[in-house]
Structures are given as C-alpha cells and as structure tokens.
Amino acid sequence: MGQPASTDSALAPRGPLAVPEKPDAPVLNCAGRSLDLSRPIIMGVINTTPDSFSDGGTLYRGLQLDVERALKRARDMVAQGAAILDIGGESTRPGAAPVSPAQEMDRVLPLVERIAAELEVVISVDTSAPALMTEAARAGAGLLNDVRALAREGALEAAAATGLPVCLMHMRGDPGTMQAAPGYADVVSEVSDFLQRRVVACEAQGISRERLLLDPGFGFGKSVKHNLQLLQGLPCLVALGLPVLVGLSRKSMIGKMIGRDVQQRLPASLGLAVLAVERGAAIIRTHDVAATADAVAMWVALNELGEE
Ligand code: 9MG
Image (cartoon, rainbow, N blue to C red; front, side, top):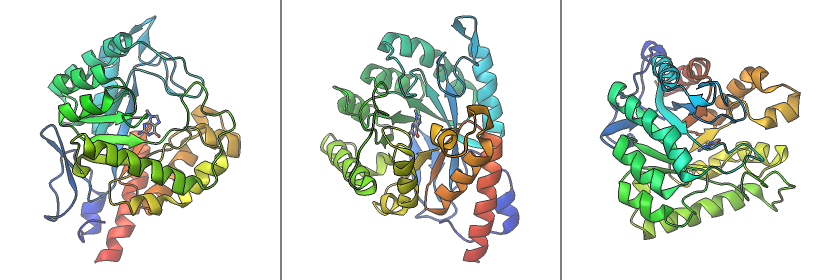
C-alpha cells in the first residue's frame, strides 16, 4: 500500500484531503472532495439516533438532537484524524425498530448541511432510504453508506443519480431479526458472492466500479465465529479489487468473546482495527477516532518501513 515514505511523514497527523503520493494511488472523488486511499483512513461515526448501541442519545438534549453538540463532535473527530464522518439517523443495532424516512431526514440533513459548510471532510450518510440519498447529496454529502447494499426499492436509481461513491455492505436479514441463528456454509465466499452480485447490479444501473466500496458487515447477521472467519478471510474480499471498509468498533462480538461492556471495548476494537488493515482494509469505521488513528499510524509506519 502506498509509496515509500519516511517514518516521520507516516507519523505526522494526516489531513483529511491528503494529496496522493503516486499517480495511480486510488483516489475516490466524493463530490469534489478527494479521498486518498493509498493508506488506510479513518471514518468517524456520528449517530443522530437516540438508541444506537454504543453512543445512542449522547447528542440529545431531552428528546431533541442537539446539532451544536453534534457539530462539536464532528470538529473533534476531524481534528483527531478522521478523513470521513459517517452520519446516521437510523439505528441498525440488532433488534432496532425502523424509523420513517421523514424522521431520518430530520435528524441527518441539518447536520450534513452544517458540517459541509464548516469542515473540509468527506461526509458519508449512513442510509438505505432513496429520498435521503438524494437530499443528502444536495446538502453536501460525499459518500453513501448503505448497510442494505442499495437493495431497497428505488435505492439503486437514487444512488446512481447522485453521482456519489457508495459503500455496499453485506447484511443477512434485517436489523430486527438478523442475529436469530445466522447460518452459512462458507461465510467468506457467500459474503463475497453477495457483494459481487451487488457490484453487477450497480454497474447495470450506471454506478461504475470506481464509485464502489465493499464492506463484509461485521455483526450484521453473523455469529462470533462468522465474524472471525470474515476477518481472517478479509484478503479474499480485498482481492475483488475494490476498497474495503470495515466496522468492528465496540461491536457485540467483542462483548461475547471477552465479556466487555460496550464502554470497555476500546482496546479490543483497536486490536481488531489493526488486524483489519493488516489484511488490506482501506477504511476503518470507528467511534473512537483519536485512538484508532494512533493505532493505524503505527501500522502505517511499520508497513512503509518495509517498502523503503
Ligand atoms: C451503519 N453501520 C453500522 N455498522 C457498520 C459497519 O460495520 N459498516 C458499515 N458500512 N456501516 C455500518
């Protein structure tokens, strides 16, 4: 990954809009803001939901989303090294109840507008709702993150029309039911086959491969063993030739494996993040940007030493 670089430059804080170091480094055009993927980068999670599994409600004042508080979190995450902020208005934790598209838009759009006006960061919108995809692009989003891989009616068309890059994630079932005894004969090849079929569907709709990212969807309809098999098999997904995004931060698999409550999962999340970049992940989705950026910087330093 990436061009040889001195250890000093590997450790220097990386701005979100870094200039590519070599002409053929993968660069994603996110509505005019560039994402250099020649080194792993960090996506910070901002949930505007009252009920997300690890940080739900922390941006609320009473029953109301506090946009100023959310904006402060966004500023902090950018200062800590996030190249992307992922803004979500629907909880996708196991068992979560669906929200209406109107409610999701009310939560997400004001924040997208404020961040786009103030911060030089790529804004990702975590949604499966076609109408929100369209409005988010108008409001300044640069990336669509869909845990349903554009499978909802109208989503392929809406995403195609935005011209934005899209992250296609694998999920078995839906958040309400997905953890009820998920079964796979071979989780790595089934996830890989699914993602390849979604790439074909995107291309048929005019979304070129250059606009696509893949995500195995850790914790979405998978047992602990499936998640571990997917992490071990991540190079098989990387070999599909598209940037791979992973979200392992604070996930329940950590709680199940080592018995940690959600607020005690940072050390294990950092370990998993490094294991994922070691296996080729290009983007790490995390609630803990500063610590994850430090952990990934150590991997980058070691990796680039090997390229000198
Ligand atoms: C919204 N969301 C929650 N977990 C996620 C994950 O692992 N990947 C992506 N792309 N989105 C996620």
